[in-house]
Image (cartoon, rainbow, N blue to C red):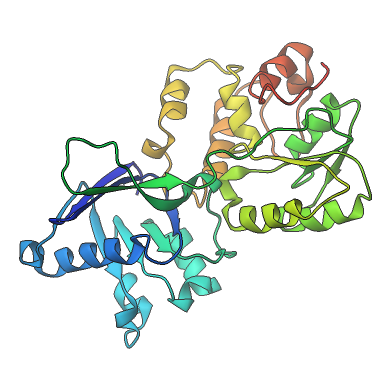
Length: 327
């Protein structure tokens, strides 16, 4: 399953309108913000159609799993679904299980998970974590108009442009590139995004920049930010691009009309049954585009081609302007 799907859910009093564009979307927010109302409307329309008093317009099949189905195993309800956007209500504990995570990764469906707690088993993007907000600017509808707002759209906030340390989530190509260009900073690998906080703890003092793949950092962003807010003797900034491979593809180092189309709308190309995150897709795409060249990309060992001055400048052009790196 791939693509971006538009939903419009309407009653006499409220309208919800939103797009779903990746395999995992997380819907958070406090009580009484509309999460339960939205799922109830979707569920009732799916059950009895217009007799529900609601109207749902969607360019994809969808399914709603509510808490009221606790007497029925989730696998009985979900395993047979294909090419479907599956909404799952909060307080269904199975969404935290490894078994469910494996199902999500391989099913080929899209999932909208209503949950305030981090889903640590799932690789979801920081850009697919939303809350429901009321938009008072829509003069074309008389009902209360609601849409999904990306919670972490303002992250990272780059405040620290001179770093003593750069922490990367692993020791692969991205770490190797940063070690090459960050002459005045010590680059440290956390050996996994789950170890980033422990790596910060090992640094007694100094300004720190954390660089990790935002495409799979969704479960960790809240925990990480809560920890960073408590730090008094370290100025810490987080930068979460989709992935290092995405930056190379975006740098115009590789000229391809098809690549431009892909970067403009990745949802149309990333098959969810094959790729559990966009990071995996961009890595495979970069390898494919360079496989018949002298500089075939490898995630584990960065070819010297990418360290050449002209190519370093191209990659650095994709960095936020607030991050100052001497070339």
